[in-house]
Picture (tube, rainbow, N blue to C red):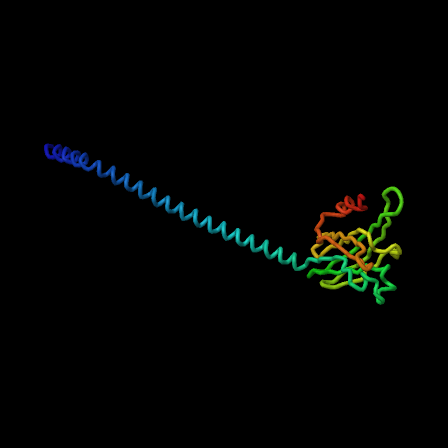
Length: 211
């Protein structure tokens, strides 16, 4: 019995002596576990950021490829105003008042090119002479002589108008233009860059011209 008491008392003393060390060991283990968890969380964050960056780069590449495809199929239609037509050279004498030369300067096919031109009527008030332009489809980098709905007996000068067409993606485009008379009686054409529009309502808001 005495031996048991002494042994128990000794064990308790030993445990009391080493208890602070055990607490330190537990604390150390907790710290190590926290550090390991932090490192794992940091690594997971880096991996998630890397995945996000890869996804962003893929999305940017897809967007770039789509834009390149769109540009590759885009048409740029405008009145071309060749010099012979502008000055009424002999080869144009019979057709100068019945066709409007147009060109597709883009890499894509222009579908269903058509438009209108307006001239201010002489006299009081605001009224307009009007004709319709029929260009059909124009191949890439090609020129055509668009038909008009009537002979332009009054001349192309001081006329304003537009060409509207679609590209292979179905997008609708609008090119606005006008003609003035320059030195030597030659026609001078000016046109805006082709503008992508949502629908023909945009044209209805701009034409006939307001003044």
